[in-house]
Amino acid sequence: GAVVSQHPSWVICKSGTSVKIECRSLDFQATTMFWYRQFPKQSLMLMATSNEGSKATYEQGVEKDKFLINHASLTLSTLTVTSAHPEDSSFYICSAGGRTSGRGEQFFGPGTRLTVL
Amino acid sequence: QKEVEQDPGPLSVPEGAIVSLNCTYSNSAFQYFMWYRQYSRKGPELLMYTYSSGNKEDGRFTAQVDKSSKYISLFIRDSQPSDSATYLCAMSARGNNRLAFGKGNQVVVIP
Image 1 (tube, rainbow over the protein chains, first blue to last red):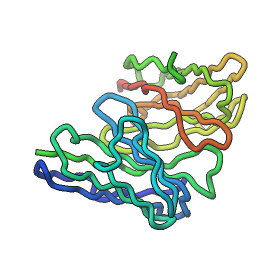
Image 2 (cartoon, each protein chain N blue to C red; image 1 turned 135 degrees about the vertical axis):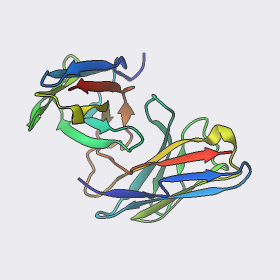
Image 3 (cartoon, rainbow over the protein chains, first blue to last red; image 1 turned 90 degrees about the vertical axis):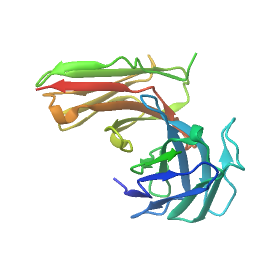
Image 4 (cartoon, one colour; image 1 turned 180 degrees about the vertical axis):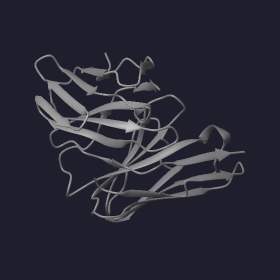
């Protein structure tokens, strides 16, 4: 399967600061990337879908000004959590689907655990 | 009614047993069906992928899709402690990249 990396794997930050998470598809070009968050013992919640070179599409209830997504190239998407608060603490996972996919498959990164103090 | 239903109840089995997992769904447009395995504190890993109805076998894993019943299954034969993980079903419609997920089943294989 395709390889997707995320960086950092975990981050601890103070309330009010911003945190950037990178998602890279290492061996294929991802025209579409997805950002999820996952709370303990729960399934994945889609936050937004980003297409390379265009604005992200956010799910209902997700604040686009708080969760900034940039998909500047076919191999890199970033999620910036702005003015983070403790309730933003969660496991954030990206996935990539693209030209080698086209059939609904998504390949997930290893996730980033964010803890906001 | 949720698009995808997966009974999230934990499942404990002895090593060597067959693990049987299933999901039901309501959207008849779903064409692509996946099973993901997720270890604790890790991202989901694509385990099985099936297009439309039918069976697919890969080693100890068998995925089945019955579109007429809107029902998919995953079987794990000769289960191993390393199979202990959460298993998520997921599906999507043709031309739609979005995945609809089940809640996930936590499986524990006891040595």
